[in-house]
Length: 388
Ligand code: SF4
Ligand code: SF4
Image (tube, rainbow, N blue to C red; front, side):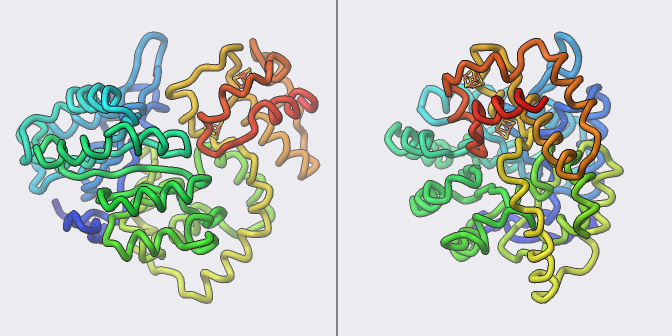
C-alpha cells in the first residue's frame, strides 16, 4: 500500500507502523454500518497499518442494532484484496482473571474473524494481533498480578494465538503503569497524552514515555484531543487560547517517544486533516515550551471534566439508572459557559428533561472505580443538580 504517512518502529515488535493510527472506538458513534465500513476502508487506503479496537467498543446505533467495532474492522479487512502487508490490530479485553481473559479473547478472535496460529489471518489477509489488558487501574492491576493472567498471556503468545502483549491505562495510574512495564512482558503500551495533560510524560514524577521508549516498547498515544467530551468545550476555550486541533495533534506527533498517535476520527474528512498535519513540520523546543505555557492558562479548568469517553458504561450501570456521563457533560458545559458569562438555559432545559438526574444519586459510590479519570461522580452530580 502506497502511503504518505511516515512510519515508526513499534518498539521490540520490530514492526513499522504509520505514525497516525486509527482508533476504532468512535465507530460506535456513527449511525450506519456503511459509514463505519467506509471509514475503516478510507484509513487503509491512506496507508494506515495499525487499527486500535477493543471488545468493549460497541454501541447501539439504532434501537436494537449494535455496532461492534471489532466486527466491522474484521469484516473490512476480510473483504480487502489489496493489502500487501499485515495490518497490526490492537484489541483489548477486560482480561483481569483467567476466565475473563479466555472469554474475552475467544469473543474477540471470533468477532474479528481471526484464524491460524502464529501466522494469523483474517480471510486471506495476514495480520499481527496485539492483545491488550484493557484499562489497568489500581484495583485491576492488583487482580492481574495475582490471577495468573500474565503467565497465561505469555503462553498464548508462545502458542501463536496472539502475536504480542500490551496494556492500556489512564492518567491516575502512573505507579501501576511503571510496575506493569517493569514486569518486562509487555511489547506495546497505550497511554493518554495531550498538550493539556502531560502528567504521564514531561510533567510526571518520572517521564513514563521516555522510560517506556528506552525499553524498546511500542507506545500508542491516545486522547491526543483530550477526549470526545472536550469538543464542545474547545468552542468556548478557543476565545482564550490559540491552540486548535492541528496544534494538539502536532504537539503529540512531535514527541519522539510516541510510536503512533491514535486518531479517533469518525469521518474521512477529519482523518484527511490529520494527515495534512502529519505531513507537516514538527515543533521546535522553543515552540513546545511556548505552547505548554499557553495550554496551562486553561489546563486547570479541565480538571473534573467528564471526557465522555464512556469507558465507565462499558461494564457498569448505575443502580439508580442515572446516565451520569450525560449529567456530568452538561455540568462541564455549564461551567465553561458560565465562566464566559454566556447563556446556559439550553443546558438547564436538557438537564430537566432527563428521566433520572443528579438528585437521584444515593451516593453509593459504586461508580467511582469505573471512571478512568477518577472523577468524584456523586459530588459532581450534586453540584450539577444545584446549578442546572
Ligand atoms: S454514586 Fe450515584 S451515580 Fe454513582 S452509582 Fe451510586 S447512585 Fe449511581
Ligand atoms: S464518568 Fe469518567 S469514565 Fe465515564 S465518561 Fe466521564 S470521564 Fe469517562
